[in-house]
Image (cartoon, rainbow, N blue to C red; front, side, top):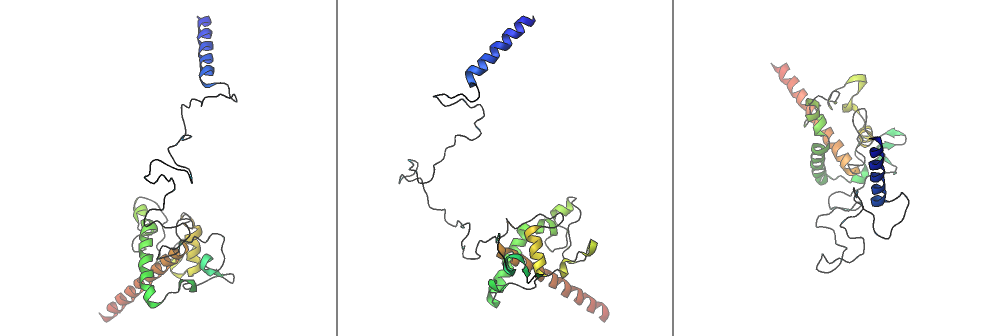
Amino acid sequence: MLKYFFIVYAFVALAILGIFGIPGSKFERPPFRLFPDMDEQDKVKGQQPSDFFADGKGSRLPAPGTVPNSGDNGEFSVDFGAGRTGYFYTGITEGYYGTGMPTELELTPEAAEAFLARGEDRYGIFCAICHGASGDGQGTVSKLGLAGVRNLHETGEAGFDPANYPDGKMFEVITHGKGQMGAYGMNIPVEDRWAIIAYVRAMQEAREVSKEDLAQKGEGQ
């Protein structure tokens, strides 16, 4: 019985070598790939012709509305600031975290409204899922059980006080992350980070105004 096992084993081994060949051997015909791993793809390489398109050109113009990797989409320049220096790109000026919006933003009273609207939009996309729509730390992931999501209006453990963070420090946290929060420097362009900070400041200020109004009403009663 053992003899037949070795005969079958040898036959199978020879069959495999015959089909797949010995590692390092060369063949005139393309090899058989059981798992091609995308080695062969239906694609057109750069500057190559293609019969698929009516003009016979494989290279195509970008689709309408495409935003260049580093250009201007008419609203904000797409710039992630990797490797650059200065307050606009780092939140740091003369070795300290700065406060206020960078002069590069050129925020006129007319532009400020659109800038805050942009910040609200970006906050809703990137931040609200954790920090909540109002910044109270009660976003979706917090309700699903993730502990330690910061309330952007109150002092937390170890003196974490985002309300009193310099704007530059908040920029750094968005860029590089902190604690459980991951880095968003490769996801959010520089100007969008500042827009988010401006919107967070607006929320914090509105919260303080509401507290003062409630306190005044309480004293009046």
